Length: 291
Length: 247
Image (cartoon, rainbow over all chains, first blue to last red; front, side, top):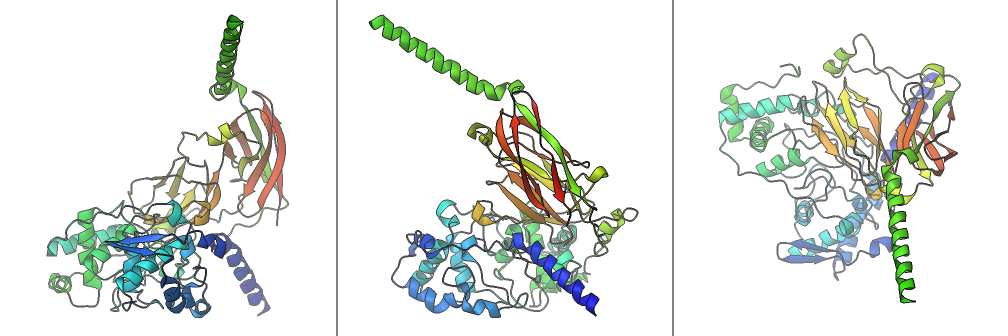
Protein backbone atom coordinates (compact mmCIF):
# COMPACT_ATOMS: atom_id res chain seq x y z
CA UNK A 1 0.00 0.00 0.00
CA UNK A 2 2.75 2.41 1.09
CA UNK A 3 4.89 1.23 -1.76
CA UNK A 4 2.21 1.91 -4.31
CA UNK A 5 1.65 5.39 -2.87
CA UNK A 6 5.38 6.10 -3.11
CA UNK A 7 5.42 4.82 -6.66
CA UNK A 8 2.48 7.01 -7.52
CA UNK A 9 4.18 10.06 -5.98
CA UNK A 10 7.39 9.35 -7.88
CA UNK A 11 5.52 8.91 -11.11
CA UNK A 12 3.51 12.11 -10.78
CA UNK A 13 6.57 14.15 -9.80
CA UNK A 14 8.48 12.67 -12.75
CA UNK A 15 5.55 13.52 -15.01
CA UNK A 16 5.50 17.07 -13.65
CA UNK A 17 9.22 17.50 -14.37
CA UNK A 18 8.81 16.07 -17.86
CA UNK A 19 5.84 18.31 -18.54
CA UNK A 20 7.70 21.47 -17.48
CA UNK A 21 9.34 22.28 -20.81
CA UNK A 22 6.02 21.54 -22.52
CA UNK A 23 4.13 23.99 -20.31
CA UNK A 24 5.20 26.91 -22.39
CA UNK A 25 2.14 28.89 -21.37
CA UNK A 26 3.09 32.44 -22.07
CA UNK A 27 2.42 35.19 -19.61
CA UNK A 28 2.40 38.50 -21.39
CA UNK A 29 1.51 41.66 -19.51
CA UNK A 30 -1.52 43.72 -20.49
CA UNK A 31 0.91 46.51 -21.31
CA UNK A 32 2.65 44.35 -23.92
CA UNK A 33 -0.65 43.15 -25.36
CA UNK A 34 -1.96 46.73 -25.58
CA UNK A 35 0.93 47.67 -27.92
CA UNK A 36 -0.89 45.68 -30.58
CA UNK A 37 -4.28 47.38 -30.32
CA UNK A 38 -3.84 48.62 -33.88
CA UNK A 39 -4.13 44.99 -35.15
CA UNK A 40 -6.46 44.50 -38.12
CA UNK A 41 -8.08 41.57 -39.86
CA UNK A 42 -9.12 41.38 -43.51
CA UNK A 43 -12.03 39.15 -44.47
CA UNK A 44 -12.95 39.75 -48.10
CA UNK A 45 -13.78 43.45 -48.19
CA UNK A 46 -14.41 43.70 -44.43
CA UNK A 47 -11.68 45.09 -42.20
CA UNK A 48 -11.79 44.16 -38.53
CA UNK A 49 -10.19 46.36 -35.86
CA UNK A 50 -8.86 45.34 -32.45
CA UNK A 51 -9.52 48.89 -31.26
CA UNK A 52 -13.16 49.00 -32.45
CA UNK A 53 -15.72 50.35 -30.00
CA UNK A 54 -17.58 47.05 -29.56
CA UNK A 55 -14.97 44.30 -29.71
CA UNK A 56 -13.70 44.73 -26.17
CA UNK A 57 -17.29 44.53 -24.96
CA UNK A 58 -18.00 41.44 -27.10
CA UNK A 59 -14.86 39.70 -25.86
CA UNK A 60 -15.68 40.51 -22.21
CA UNK A 61 -19.23 39.31 -22.59
CA UNK A 62 -18.81 36.16 -24.70
CA UNK A 63 -15.19 34.98 -24.67
CA UNK A 64 -13.34 36.05 -21.54
CA UNK A 65 -14.92 33.38 -19.31
CA UNK A 66 -12.85 30.70 -21.02
CA UNK A 67 -10.09 32.51 -22.92
CA UNK A 68 -9.26 34.97 -20.12
CA UNK A 69 -8.47 38.67 -19.89
CA UNK A 70 -4.96 38.10 -21.31
CA UNK A 71 -6.15 35.67 -23.98
CA UNK A 72 -4.03 32.92 -22.44
CA UNK A 73 -6.89 30.42 -22.06
CA UNK A 74 -6.96 30.83 -18.28
CA UNK A 75 -10.42 32.32 -17.87
CA UNK A 76 -12.45 31.57 -14.75
CA UNK A 77 -14.25 28.65 -16.38
CA UNK A 78 -11.10 27.00 -17.76
CA UNK A 79 -10.43 25.16 -14.49
CA UNK A 80 -13.70 23.25 -14.85
CA UNK A 81 -12.85 21.95 -18.32
CA UNK A 82 -11.24 18.53 -18.02
CA UNK A 83 -9.48 17.06 -21.04
CA UNK A 84 -9.83 14.87 -22.96
CA UNK A 85 -13.63 15.17 -22.61
CA UNK A 86 -13.48 18.97 -22.47
CA UNK A 87 -10.40 20.40 -24.17
CA UNK A 88 -8.88 23.46 -22.50
CA UNK A 89 -9.48 26.85 -24.19
CA UNK A 90 -6.88 28.04 -26.71
CA UNK A 91 -3.94 30.14 -25.49
CA UNK A 92 -4.09 32.96 -28.05
CA UNK A 93 -0.71 34.32 -26.93
CA UNK A 94 1.09 31.34 -28.49
CA UNK A 95 -0.50 31.89 -31.88
CA UNK A 96 -0.95 28.13 -32.39
CA UNK A 97 -4.28 27.06 -33.91
CA UNK A 98 -5.81 23.73 -34.88
CA UNK A 99 -7.96 24.83 -37.80
CA UNK A 100 -5.84 26.29 -40.58
CA UNK A 101 -5.74 26.31 -44.33
CA UNK A 102 -1.97 26.89 -43.98
CA UNK A 103 0.90 24.38 -43.51
CA UNK A 104 1.91 23.07 -40.08
CA UNK A 105 4.06 25.52 -38.11
CA UNK A 106 2.57 28.61 -39.75
CA UNK A 107 0.01 31.16 -38.65
CA UNK A 108 -3.58 30.73 -39.85
CA UNK A 109 -5.16 33.21 -42.23
CA UNK A 110 -7.72 35.75 -40.98
CA UNK A 111 -10.42 33.71 -42.80
CA UNK A 112 -9.37 30.58 -40.88
CA UNK A 113 -9.98 32.33 -37.54
CA UNK A 114 -13.18 33.93 -38.83
CA UNK A 115 -14.52 30.51 -39.90
CA UNK A 116 -13.56 28.92 -36.57
CA UNK A 117 -15.58 31.51 -34.60
CA UNK A 118 -18.71 30.78 -36.66
CA UNK A 119 -18.19 27.01 -36.80
CA UNK A 120 -17.35 26.49 -33.15
CA UNK A 121 -15.47 23.42 -31.98
CA UNK A 122 -17.39 20.19 -31.88
CA UNK A 123 -16.95 18.17 -28.66
CA UNK A 124 -15.68 21.17 -26.72
CA UNK A 125 -17.06 24.14 -24.79
CA UNK A 126 -16.64 26.37 -27.85
CA UNK A 127 -20.11 26.95 -29.35
CA UNK A 128 -21.01 28.19 -32.84
CA UNK A 129 -21.08 31.99 -32.61
CA UNK A 130 -23.66 32.50 -35.33
CA UNK A 131 -25.33 35.52 -33.68
CA UNK A 132 -22.46 37.88 -34.48
CA UNK A 133 -22.57 40.16 -37.50
CA UNK A 134 -19.77 39.82 -40.02
CA UNK A 135 -18.21 43.05 -38.72
CA UNK A 136 -18.32 41.84 -35.12
CA UNK A 137 -16.65 38.59 -36.14
CA UNK A 138 -13.95 40.39 -38.15
CA UNK A 139 -13.25 42.63 -35.14
CA UNK A 140 -12.98 39.55 -32.90
CA UNK A 141 -10.45 38.03 -35.32
CA UNK A 142 -8.31 41.18 -35.00
CA UNK A 143 -8.79 41.01 -31.22
CA UNK A 144 -7.72 37.33 -31.05
CA UNK A 145 -4.64 38.16 -33.14
CA UNK A 146 -3.59 41.10 -30.95
CA UNK A 147 -2.88 38.77 -28.01
CA UNK A 148 0.07 37.14 -29.81
CA UNK A 149 3.27 38.94 -30.76
CA UNK A 150 3.56 36.48 -33.66
CA UNK A 151 0.84 38.20 -35.68
CA UNK A 152 2.81 41.47 -35.47
CA UNK A 153 6.02 39.94 -36.86
CA UNK A 154 5.06 36.91 -38.98
CA UNK A 155 2.90 36.54 -42.05
CA UNK A 156 0.31 33.76 -42.19
CA UNK A 157 1.32 30.66 -44.17
CA UNK A 158 0.28 30.23 -47.78
CA UNK A 159 -2.95 28.20 -47.88
CA UNK A 160 -2.44 24.72 -49.31
CA UNK A 161 -3.73 24.17 -52.84
CA UNK A 162 -6.79 21.89 -53.01
CA UNK A 163 -7.58 20.53 -56.48
CA UNK A 164 -11.26 20.35 -57.51
CA UNK A 165 -13.08 17.40 -55.98
CA UNK A 166 -13.14 14.45 -58.41
CA UNK A 167 -16.05 12.08 -58.92
CA UNK A 168 -16.58 9.46 -56.21
CA UNK A 169 -15.78 6.03 -57.63
CA UNK A 170 -15.23 2.53 -56.24
CA UNK A 171 -11.61 2.68 -57.44
CA UNK A 172 -10.99 5.88 -55.54
CA UNK A 173 -12.50 4.48 -52.35
CA UNK A 174 -10.32 1.39 -52.61
CA UNK A 175 -7.28 3.58 -53.29
CA UNK A 176 -8.21 5.68 -50.26
CA UNK A 177 -8.26 2.54 -48.13
CA UNK A 178 -4.70 1.83 -49.31
CA UNK A 179 -3.62 5.34 -48.25
CA UNK A 180 -5.28 4.82 -44.83
CA UNK A 181 -3.24 1.60 -44.48
CA UNK A 182 0.03 3.02 -45.88
CA UNK A 183 0.29 6.17 -43.76
CA UNK A 184 -1.16 4.25 -40.81
CA UNK A 185 -4.04 6.49 -39.76
CA UNK A 186 -5.19 3.48 -37.74
CA UNK A 187 -2.28 3.83 -35.28
CA UNK A 188 -4.46 6.37 -33.46
CA UNK A 189 -7.87 6.31 -35.17
CA UNK A 190 -8.16 2.49 -35.22
CA UNK A 191 -8.71 0.22 -38.23
CA UNK A 192 -12.47 0.87 -38.12
CA UNK A 193 -12.09 4.58 -37.26
CA UNK A 194 -13.36 4.08 -33.70
CA UNK A 195 -10.49 6.04 -32.11
CA UNK A 196 -9.15 2.84 -30.57
CA UNK A 197 -5.78 2.46 -32.30
CA UNK A 198 -2.81 1.19 -30.26
CA UNK A 199 -1.46 4.75 -29.72
CA UNK A 200 -4.82 6.31 -28.80
CA UNK A 201 -4.65 5.89 -24.98
CA UNK A 202 -1.32 7.71 -24.56
CA UNK A 203 -1.94 10.77 -26.75
CA UNK A 204 -1.28 14.20 -25.24
CA UNK A 205 -1.49 17.73 -26.62
CA UNK A 206 1.44 20.19 -26.72
CA UNK A 207 0.82 21.08 -23.07
CA UNK A 208 0.97 17.43 -22.05
CA UNK A 209 -2.78 17.13 -21.43
CA UNK A 210 -4.65 13.98 -22.51
CA UNK A 211 -6.38 14.23 -25.87
CA UNK A 212 -8.50 11.74 -27.83
CA UNK A 213 -8.25 11.04 -31.56
CA UNK A 214 -11.33 11.65 -33.71
CA UNK A 215 -13.87 8.84 -33.65
CA UNK A 216 -15.26 8.60 -37.18
CA UNK A 217 -18.08 6.22 -36.30
CA UNK A 218 -20.15 7.99 -33.65
CA UNK A 219 -21.66 10.73 -35.78
CA UNK A 220 -19.82 13.76 -34.42
CA UNK A 221 -18.38 16.41 -36.69
CA UNK A 222 -14.62 16.72 -37.25
CA UNK A 223 -13.16 19.61 -35.22
CA UNK A 224 -12.25 21.78 -38.18
CA UNK A 225 -15.33 21.30 -40.34
CA UNK A 226 -17.41 18.62 -41.99
CA UNK A 227 -17.24 19.36 -45.73
CA UNK A 228 -15.07 17.20 -47.99
CA UNK A 229 -12.68 20.14 -48.40
CA UNK A 230 -12.48 20.56 -44.60
CA UNK A 231 -11.54 16.90 -44.17
CA UNK A 232 -8.95 17.19 -46.96
CA UNK A 233 -7.45 20.20 -45.17
CA UNK A 234 -7.37 18.54 -41.74
CA UNK A 235 -4.92 15.78 -42.66
CA UNK A 236 -2.91 17.85 -45.14
CA UNK A 237 -2.22 20.71 -42.67
CA UNK A 238 -2.41 18.83 -39.36
CA UNK A 239 -4.04 20.22 -36.24
CA UNK A 240 -1.23 22.22 -34.61
CA UNK A 241 -1.00 21.91 -30.84
CA UNK A 242 -2.29 18.32 -31.02
CA UNK A 243 -0.77 14.93 -31.97
CA UNK A 244 -2.41 15.10 -35.43
CA UNK A 245 0.48 15.71 -37.85
CA UNK A 246 0.51 17.09 -41.36
CA UNK A 247 0.61 14.47 -44.13
CA UNK A 248 1.30 17.00 -46.89
CA UNK A 249 4.71 15.49 -47.72
CA UNK A 250 3.39 11.95 -47.89
CA UNK A 251 -0.03 12.07 -49.54
CA UNK A 252 -0.32 13.43 -53.09
CA UNK A 253 -3.19 15.86 -53.78
CA UNK A 254 -5.10 13.31 -55.89
CA UNK A 255 -4.58 10.56 -53.29
CA UNK A 256 -5.83 12.96 -50.63
CA UNK A 257 -9.25 12.99 -52.30
CA UNK A 258 -9.21 9.17 -52.32
CA UNK A 259 -8.57 9.25 -48.58
CA UNK A 260 -11.42 11.74 -48.01
CA UNK A 261 -13.79 9.35 -49.80
CA UNK A 262 -12.57 6.37 -47.77
CA UNK A 263 -12.94 8.30 -44.49
CA UNK A 264 -16.58 8.97 -45.46
CA UNK A 265 -17.16 5.19 -45.53
CA UNK A 266 -16.12 5.04 -41.86
CA UNK A 267 -18.32 7.97 -40.81
CA UNK A 268 -21.78 7.42 -39.44
CA UNK A 269 -23.95 9.56 -41.76
CA UNK A 270 -25.20 7.86 -44.91
CA UNK A 271 -23.26 8.78 -48.01
CA UNK A 272 -22.60 7.67 -51.55
CA UNK A 273 -19.19 6.46 -50.33
CA UNK A 274 -20.83 4.30 -47.64
CA UNK A 275 -23.16 2.74 -50.23
CA UNK A 276 -20.26 1.88 -52.53
CA UNK A 277 -18.23 0.43 -49.64
CA UNK A 278 -21.19 -1.79 -48.78
CA UNK A 279 -21.45 -3.05 -52.36
CA UNK A 280 -17.70 -3.69 -52.41
CA UNK A 281 -17.94 -5.50 -49.05
CA UNK A 282 -14.92 -3.40 -48.04
CA UNK A 283 -13.13 -4.78 -44.97
CA UNK A 284 -11.17 -2.71 -42.43
CA UNK A 285 -7.44 -2.41 -43.11
CA UNK A 286 -5.01 -4.76 -41.41
CA UNK A 287 -3.08 -3.48 -38.41
CA UNK A 288 -0.10 -5.48 -39.61
CA UNK A 289 2.04 -2.91 -41.45
CA UNK A 290 3.44 -5.60 -43.75
CA UNK A 291 0.08 -6.02 -45.49
CA UNK B 1 51.29 70.35 -47.89
CA UNK B 2 48.77 69.04 -50.33
CA UNK B 3 50.92 66.04 -51.29
CA UNK B 4 51.43 65.30 -47.61
CA UNK B 5 47.70 65.05 -46.96
CA UNK B 6 47.25 62.85 -50.05
CA UNK B 7 49.96 60.44 -48.93
CA UNK B 8 48.37 60.38 -45.49
CA UNK B 9 45.04 59.49 -47.07
CA UNK B 10 46.69 56.71 -49.08
CA UNK B 11 48.41 55.40 -45.97
CA UNK B 12 45.10 55.43 -44.13
CA UNK B 13 43.35 53.62 -46.98
CA UNK B 14 46.09 50.97 -47.08
CA UNK B 15 45.86 50.53 -43.33
CA UNK B 16 42.08 50.19 -43.53
CA UNK B 17 42.23 47.60 -46.31
CA UNK B 18 44.99 45.71 -44.47
CA UNK B 19 42.95 45.58 -41.29
CA UNK B 20 39.95 44.46 -43.31
CA UNK B 21 42.01 41.64 -44.80
CA UNK B 22 43.15 40.75 -41.32
CA UNK B 23 39.62 40.57 -39.96
CA UNK B 24 38.39 38.61 -42.98
CA UNK B 25 41.47 36.40 -42.86
CA UNK B 26 40.47 35.55 -39.35
CA UNK B 27 37.63 33.47 -40.71
CA UNK B 28 39.44 32.07 -43.72
CA UNK B 29 42.66 31.00 -41.99
CA UNK B 30 41.70 28.07 -39.82
CA UNK B 31 45.25 28.08 -38.45
CA UNK B 32 44.39 31.02 -36.20
CA UNK B 33 41.44 29.17 -34.72
CA UNK B 34 41.83 26.91 -31.77
CA UNK B 35 39.62 24.36 -30.10
CA UNK B 36 38.19 23.44 -26.76
CA UNK B 37 38.30 19.83 -25.73
CA UNK B 38 37.62 17.81 -22.63
CA UNK B 39 35.37 15.26 -21.08
CA UNK B 40 32.13 15.17 -19.14
CA UNK B 41 31.68 12.64 -16.38
CA UNK B 42 29.01 11.57 -13.95
CA UNK B 43 30.12 11.08 -10.35
CA UNK B 44 28.67 8.20 -8.38
CA UNK B 45 26.68 5.30 -9.76
CA UNK B 46 25.12 5.38 -13.18
CA UNK B 47 21.32 5.62 -12.84
CA UNK B 48 19.24 2.70 -13.99
CA UNK B 49 17.81 3.32 -17.45
CA UNK B 50 14.43 1.63 -17.56
CA UNK B 51 13.74 -0.80 -20.38
CA UNK B 52 11.11 0.26 -22.93
CA UNK B 53 8.05 -1.87 -23.61
CA UNK B 54 7.33 -1.51 -27.32
CA UNK B 55 4.69 -4.26 -27.49
CA UNK B 56 2.02 -1.76 -28.63
CA UNK B 57 3.81 -1.57 -31.97
CA UNK B 58 4.83 -5.13 -32.90
CA UNK B 59 7.19 -3.87 -35.63
CA UNK B 60 9.13 -1.79 -33.08
CA UNK B 61 9.17 -4.63 -30.55
CA UNK B 62 10.55 -7.04 -33.20
CA UNK B 63 13.56 -4.78 -33.87
CA UNK B 64 14.55 -5.07 -30.21
CA UNK B 65 13.66 -8.74 -29.74
CA UNK B 66 17.27 -9.68 -28.83
CA UNK B 67 18.45 -6.31 -27.57
CA UNK B 68 15.84 -4.50 -25.47
CA UNK B 69 15.81 -0.70 -25.78
CA UNK B 70 16.35 1.51 -22.74
CA UNK B 71 15.59 5.12 -21.92
CA UNK B 72 18.44 7.45 -22.85
CA UNK B 73 18.00 10.34 -20.44
CA UNK B 74 21.39 9.65 -18.76
CA UNK B 75 23.68 7.47 -20.83
CA UNK B 76 26.91 6.66 -18.96
CA UNK B 77 29.84 4.97 -20.69
CA UNK B 78 33.10 3.46 -19.47
CA UNK B 79 34.83 5.44 -16.71
CA UNK B 80 31.67 7.41 -15.97
CA UNK B 81 31.72 9.35 -19.26
CA UNK B 82 28.36 11.04 -19.95
CA UNK B 83 27.06 10.79 -23.49
CA UNK B 84 24.82 13.35 -25.25
CA UNK B 85 26.01 16.38 -23.29
CA UNK B 86 25.95 19.53 -25.44
CA UNK B 87 28.88 21.95 -25.10
CA UNK B 88 28.79 25.46 -26.41
CA UNK B 89 30.26 28.91 -25.82
CA UNK B 90 27.77 30.86 -23.76
CA UNK B 91 29.87 34.02 -23.24
CA UNK B 92 32.70 35.84 -24.98
CA UNK B 93 32.08 34.83 -28.58
CA UNK B 94 32.64 37.73 -31.02
CA UNK B 95 29.59 38.67 -33.10
CA UNK B 96 31.31 37.54 -36.32
CA UNK B 97 31.74 34.00 -34.98
CA UNK B 98 28.16 34.01 -33.67
CA UNK B 99 26.67 34.82 -37.04
CA UNK B 100 28.58 32.11 -38.93
CA UNK B 101 26.31 29.17 -39.72
CA UNK B 102 27.94 25.78 -40.42
CA UNK B 103 27.13 24.27 -43.80
CA UNK B 104 27.05 20.64 -42.59
CA UNK B 105 23.55 19.21 -42.22
CA UNK B 106 23.11 17.20 -38.99
CA UNK B 107 20.77 14.22 -39.38
CA UNK B 108 18.14 13.04 -36.90
CA UNK B 109 17.13 9.47 -37.70
CA UNK B 110 14.08 7.56 -36.50
CA UNK B 111 15.61 4.12 -36.29
CA UNK B 112 14.13 1.04 -34.62
CA UNK B 113 11.57 3.36 -32.98
CA UNK B 114 14.28 5.36 -31.22
CA UNK B 115 15.87 8.72 -32.03
CA UNK B 116 19.43 8.47 -33.36
CA UNK B 117 21.07 10.52 -31.98
CA UNK B 118 19.00 11.06 -28.86
CA UNK B 119 20.19 14.70 -28.78
CA UNK B 120 20.88 16.54 -32.03
CA UNK B 121 23.01 19.66 -31.55
CA UNK B 122 22.97 22.44 -34.12
CA UNK B 123 23.59 26.12 -34.63
CA UNK B 124 20.85 28.73 -34.90
CA UNK B 125 19.68 28.83 -38.54
CA UNK B 126 21.68 25.68 -39.41
CA UNK B 127 19.76 23.33 -41.68
CA UNK B 128 19.14 19.87 -40.23
CA UNK B 129 17.44 16.82 -41.62
CA UNK B 130 14.89 14.41 -40.13
CA UNK B 131 14.83 10.96 -41.75
CA UNK B 132 13.16 7.65 -41.00
CA UNK B 133 14.70 4.21 -41.37
CA UNK B 134 11.62 2.47 -39.99
CA UNK B 135 8.81 0.39 -41.48
CA UNK B 136 6.28 2.01 -39.17
CA UNK B 137 4.76 5.49 -39.23
CA UNK B 138 6.22 8.18 -36.97
CA UNK B 139 5.15 11.74 -36.39
CA UNK B 140 7.93 14.15 -35.62
CA UNK B 141 6.68 16.79 -33.22
CA UNK B 142 9.14 19.32 -31.75
CA UNK B 143 7.77 21.45 -28.90
CA UNK B 144 9.67 24.73 -28.71
CA UNK B 145 8.32 27.71 -26.82
CA UNK B 146 6.78 29.88 -29.56
CA UNK B 147 7.73 32.98 -27.54
CA UNK B 148 11.42 32.34 -28.35
CA UNK B 149 10.74 32.70 -32.06
CA UNK B 150 10.85 28.93 -32.70
CA UNK B 151 7.49 27.68 -33.90
CA UNK B 152 6.27 24.13 -33.17
CA UNK B 153 5.31 21.90 -36.11
CA UNK B 154 4.13 18.33 -36.47
CA UNK B 155 4.74 16.18 -39.55
CA UNK B 156 4.16 12.52 -40.29
CA UNK B 157 6.83 10.21 -41.69
CA UNK B 158 5.34 6.92 -42.88
CA UNK B 159 7.72 4.17 -44.14
CA UNK B 160 9.77 5.48 -47.07
CA UNK B 161 8.88 9.12 -46.36
CA UNK B 162 11.16 11.78 -47.83
CA UNK B 163 13.52 13.63 -45.45
CA UNK B 164 12.29 16.79 -43.76
CA UNK B 165 14.69 19.76 -43.85
CA UNK B 166 14.26 22.52 -41.30
CA UNK B 167 16.14 25.02 -39.16
CA UNK B 168 15.45 26.97 -35.97
CA UNK B 169 15.45 30.74 -35.55
CA UNK B 170 16.59 31.00 -31.93
CA UNK B 171 18.79 29.23 -29.37
CA UNK B 172 16.69 26.82 -27.32
CA UNK B 173 16.71 23.25 -26.02
CA UNK B 174 13.69 21.86 -27.81
CA UNK B 175 12.03 18.62 -26.71
CA UNK B 176 10.88 16.46 -29.60
CA UNK B 177 8.43 13.60 -29.41
CA UNK B 178 6.52 11.05 -31.44
CA UNK B 179 2.89 10.91 -30.34
CA UNK B 180 2.41 7.51 -31.97
CA UNK B 181 5.28 5.99 -29.94
CA UNK B 182 5.10 7.75 -26.57
CA UNK B 183 8.50 6.45 -25.41
CA UNK B 184 10.22 8.40 -28.20
CA UNK B 185 11.60 11.56 -26.60
CA UNK B 186 14.62 13.43 -27.89
CA UNK B 187 16.09 16.91 -28.11
CA UNK B 188 17.08 19.51 -30.65
CA UNK B 189 19.82 21.47 -28.87
CA UNK B 190 19.98 24.77 -30.74
CA UNK B 191 22.92 26.95 -29.69
CA UNK B 192 24.69 30.03 -31.05
CA UNK B 193 28.19 29.52 -32.43
CA UNK B 194 30.58 26.54 -32.33
CA UNK B 195 29.32 23.50 -30.41
CA UNK B 196 30.06 19.86 -29.68
CA UNK B 197 28.32 16.88 -28.18
CA UNK B 198 29.94 14.20 -26.03
CA UNK B 199 30.53 10.72 -27.42
CA UNK B 200 30.06 7.40 -25.62
CA UNK B 201 33.14 8.09 -23.45
CA UNK B 202 31.99 11.56 -22.51
CA UNK B 203 34.68 13.20 -24.70
CA UNK B 204 34.13 16.24 -26.86
CA UNK B 205 35.95 18.78 -29.05
CA UNK B 206 34.56 22.15 -30.06
CA UNK B 207 36.36 23.04 -33.32
CA UNK B 208 36.85 26.41 -35.02
CA UNK B 209 37.05 28.55 -31.90
CA UNK B 210 38.64 31.96 -32.52
CA UNK B 211 41.30 32.95 -29.95
CA UNK B 212 39.78 34.53 -26.85
CA UNK B 213 38.46 34.02 -23.34
CA UNK B 214 35.15 32.21 -23.01
CA UNK B 215 32.59 30.67 -20.78
CA UNK B 216 31.80 27.13 -21.91
CA UNK B 217 28.45 25.65 -20.89
CA UNK B 218 27.73 21.93 -20.66
CA UNK B 219 24.03 21.03 -20.92
CA UNK B 220 22.53 17.69 -19.93
CA UNK B 221 18.80 17.14 -20.33
CA UNK B 222 18.24 15.82 -16.78
CA UNK B 223 21.13 17.30 -14.82
CA UNK B 224 21.00 20.86 -16.13
CA UNK B 225 24.01 23.04 -16.94
CA UNK B 226 27.54 23.65 -15.72
CA UNK B 227 30.00 26.30 -16.84
CA UNK B 228 33.79 26.67 -17.05
CA UNK B 229 36.12 29.51 -18.07
CA UNK B 230 38.70 28.83 -20.78
CA UNK B 231 41.20 30.86 -22.78
CA UNK B 232 41.93 29.72 -26.30
CA UNK B 233 45.23 30.82 -27.87
CA UNK B 234 45.64 31.06 -31.65
CA UNK B 235 45.82 27.60 -33.16
CA UNK B 236 45.93 25.99 -29.71
CA UNK B 237 43.70 23.66 -27.76
CA UNK B 238 42.16 24.58 -24.42
CA UNK B 239 40.73 22.05 -21.98
CA UNK B 240 37.51 22.14 -19.98
CA UNK B 241 36.38 19.07 -18.04
CA UNK B 242 33.04 18.78 -16.28
CA UNK B 243 31.65 16.48 -13.63
CA UNK B 244 27.93 16.24 -13.02
CA UNK B 245 26.78 14.93 -9.68
CA UNK B 246 24.54 11.88 -9.99
CA UNK B 247 21.15 12.26 -8.41
